[in-house]
Length: 593
Image 1 (cartoon, rainbow, N blue to C red):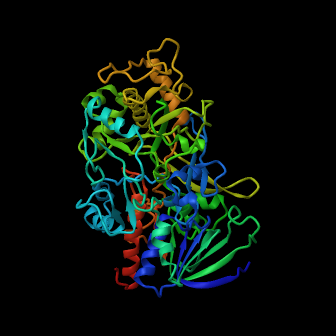
Image 2: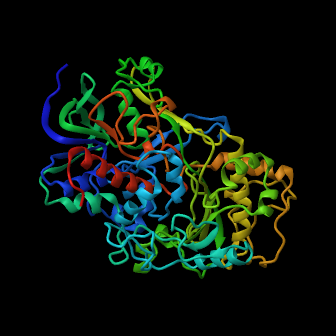
Image 3: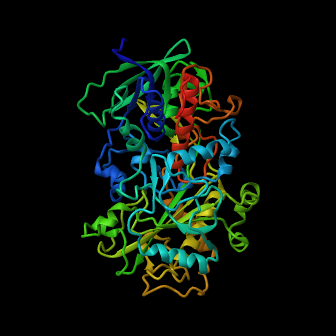
């Protein structure tokens, strides 16, 4: 079957998310004569309020949203038979245009742990500085001040932020620091900065700051609403991309395939879900996976789609005092201050490590993991605790029947280096249609539930000491047995700072674990499915992002991360983009600005 060949470009990007925008924008600036095409299944994001106004971030997660893809995982007994949902960005700019704009950076040692030549932290820190404009405070040696991505404290801070820090530095006995994103500090309470322009109040995303700023460059093209099917090869050289109009973005468009040629390079940049499945549809992957889908194998790379990793998030809401300012008003449609439109409701945090007392209180199932991975790495946080100034329910359950006019605050906590891992592959249904075979791996390893269990208890102790605390939203907490000291209820105010902690019985712990298996979810930090590792170690790309076994084909996005990172993944996605742009420029003999 022949397909119309629309035109030829020097570089074609299969996917238009965060990293693709960084690479394409940088290359267009380095050499404006390069003919560059980005193919993105989602739609343009230019100046759309849902993408640029921080207060509208939650709308991207609505069940009817078309700006994200709701990837549905296989059901698992480790999460009580649920089929988990993992959203991923589906628009020009990808996750950078739909995330919650939380500014966190992984410890520098995470990149050294990758053990990949050229990706050591000493080589990457200059790029971290190059990409950002840190508006919070001057003269910080690990931050940048001239980059495209703005970092600020956002708009007006919510009242619960200071309460969280005050309890953390007294009851929780941790120190305070203005900046815990210096690539090494953790276990310290701090403000939570944001990917928000401190002057305009707009989201700071990759689409607007790398691609749309190149509107004057007539050689940089973005075709939205285009779903990449596969890479076209001549022998084993990538020469183009086959794509169709995406049915979700363009329901009335012709669904026949077209081909666009790439004279120099194809870059697969479709994320932890899209990149491995594009490779598999192109004949690159494990023999058994391709055979069941009737695809001829071009290259045997069994690592494609394997070692899927994420962070594990729990959202637990509490009642809050009527007089404090929360972002709950936004969801109610109340009249609100303009400053509230320019912030995300997340103003403080701790990148937490347990102390000796907390370690003793945790289940022994975590001890081997602590000793093997965390104990001698003091810059590695175990989890992030942060208060969210709004009612926030898990993806797995609808908003409870609670009075809509109340004020709420939510304990958000997520674990950073889970042991469990999953996979992302293509499969076919009985009627021959393609579907994704997605195993999240959530809580497969017993040590992972231990951290979530303790996170529930510790954040509850912190929240019940905050001045705005008015009790638990009982329907969204564990259903403790009658007579339990841990029973959840409304309260007239907080307990004293020196009040004793709640004593949980073995039965209470079982209830907490069951509750967490019901509600644990993704923070949308998916990575690892096209790992940058040696081919013999199930790697997919080498240190220069070349896919093993073929030529003129690279992968550049979070799927290449060979290990998890101790932070929200936007910062790493930007970093991979900056490094990939330099690699490609070097390959082409282009000077980097």
